[in-house]
Length: 245
Image (cartoon, rainbow, N blue to C red):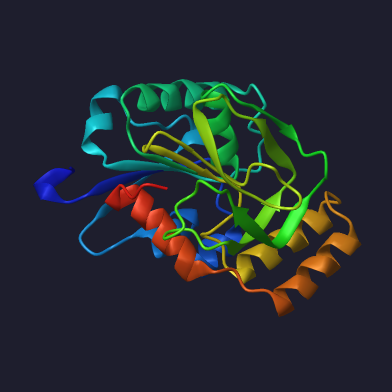
């Protein structure tokens, strides 16, 4: 528990704030706290790409850690990524609670000994319905759960002690848990439709995706809504309530 009995959380930011996200939302930290924060909590940001991570003596003040998405590849060997891997393994050894989103999901998988890389089915960008596994908590996770996606990498395999919680038509590992203290989510529960449209346009401008991808994103957003309420319940329940997934 953080200072004065308040719960305290660390967001490990693995992406730079684009001007649009800064101007519209106040940066990615605010995007995450809009989904996860309750009154009376303290939320700190660490810009991992700039070499910022909590010091060893700071780890204990945090009730949980969130690892964000990134434009970088979780399978790369840049110095900041290797530093993050070492830090996540330290948190795992201490049984600290960690939620990983997209890149965060992939880098946690790598830290635990799983394999990751470019998705065999290519980009998944839009709103994808994921399906819980037979062993996932049926009271917490709906059978079909729409989430915003924006990724071209995925988790291929996980070690035997790590349990898959959900899959989709494109991706075999959409959610996983390790014990009761680590959860990975391939999708983006924190994203709004506006953020997805902005990222889609940016990817198209940089010729990373094709015009057909961008068209499909706009079409799916007209017919399918991400279930933000369910994702808020899942993410907050995991981070704060210790709910069994």
